[in-house]
Amino acid sequence: MGFAAPADDELADTVTIGRYLLRDKDASYLLQMSGDRFAADGILHGDMIIFERSRDFRVGDIVVALGDDGYSLEYFTKGMRGQIIGVVTGSFRKYK
Amino acid sequence: MERQIVHFDGDSFFASVEVALNHTLRGKPVVTGAERGAATSASYEAKRMGVSRSMTMKQIKEICPNVVVVNSDYRAYAIFAHRMYALVRRFTPMVEEYSVDECFADITGLDVVYKKSYPEIAQIIKEKLEESLGITFGVGLAPTKVLAKAASKFNKPAGFTHITLETRRDYLARVAVGAVWGIGTATATQLQALGIATALDFADKSFAWMQSQHMHKTHRALWYELNGTLVHELSLEHRTDIQSIIKSRTFSPPSTNKTFVYSQLAKNVERACERARAHGVRARAITFYLKTQSFMYGRIELDLPIATNDPRDILHAVKPQFEKLYRPGVPYRATGISLRSLVPQDTFTVDFFGEGEKMLQGAVVLKSIDAINHRYGNQSVFLGSSMQAVNYRERSRASKAAKRVEKVLMQSEYKKKSLDIPFLGSVQ
Image (cartoon, rainbow over all chains, first blue to last red; front, side):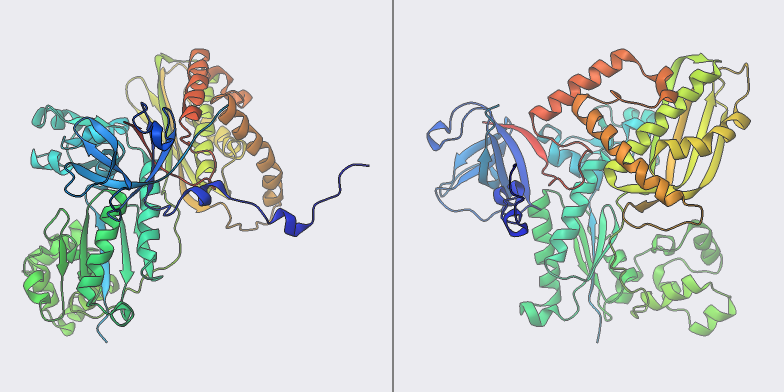
């Protein structure tokens, strides 16, 4: 009775969540979403946002701006004002 | 071939990390070191107000009334340090992790690989560091480590300075001999008495002069390095992040109860060991002290038979010494422990008395204790000898804090293998 022991190579077929979520782990930081400005993009209040401190972003990317009122998410457009410190590369959410 | 050594030096590193983690500190004079009552670093805003690291907190607050003083967060500084090393290693494996806020890189030969000049390569790495970490670096490029370290100090903050064999003398004329890396105050005074005021004065002396003055080997090495000949190769092994772990606590009212005082010390030992385990290091030596109400210190330094982070091993060594140090009837107000000569957990030297094996068994118990304390709050489980020092109100506070931390996914010192991603707060 009982379950067959899994073969070694089955065990190897795993995903490390950190690796999956992070593109550049040495430049990544976390923020927590407050409010529903980006609900249309699937980013809800309380979601964790991963962003990279980087200048490598394009028009349409969601970027992180840092102003006097703190951090905010923005769609990058040409001629955008304010200090952009990075680009959003992922997000995650916990249900329980 | 002229070697190409780069020195990277984080500007006001600890204070800069604090600002990177807390945007409300931007533009403010920030000083770290609240926990020890002495500045461990000061932001450039604070330095511009005249703050220096040799001042007491009281002096700092007088000269700079709007200063923000925060606790040093060595865990955060270590995360940024590791990121710095890792980012530089993307360009070359020849990296020396010199200290928590500095590293050297040997980029000799990379001009062919990147099809760029050496100053361009050094500046590309500098930009990558500043962009990824959100803090600035002083960077020096030169043919030797001593020259590179001198170069990174020019044009601070965020400076870049290239010293070559040709321009070397111009720069060294602007460096006081006492400011040269490796020349201490005593040597500087000695050299000044011999008429040597600048690094150039020293470099320009002949080798025969060095011999006639019986210069120490290390100073001869400096002389070579200042003259552009590399003597100090980069040391490429990984180092542990921390030099020592200190835990101390004042209690009031002062106590003449021996069991209580020992219990306080035991608690500090336990917390220090917990921190050592979280960092994956063991101590080879310790210092502990007892402070009396009249601020007299009794200190004892001990070498341990084996490197350990098990509080039971340390208390075993401490107990007999405590008996010697403790004076009955004297009111004590604080105890403290410092774990020194830290070595990484995985380097394991076998000893002759079977202590090593005993330690492996102990490790399983400690792992469980750490897991329970992480889950249910600090000091849910503790040694019997710490019993008297454990404050119940504090325990319930710790347990609430543990839950709060879990909520935002910020890992504390718990798992070494976790990916450490700094959490910066909320975003709109």
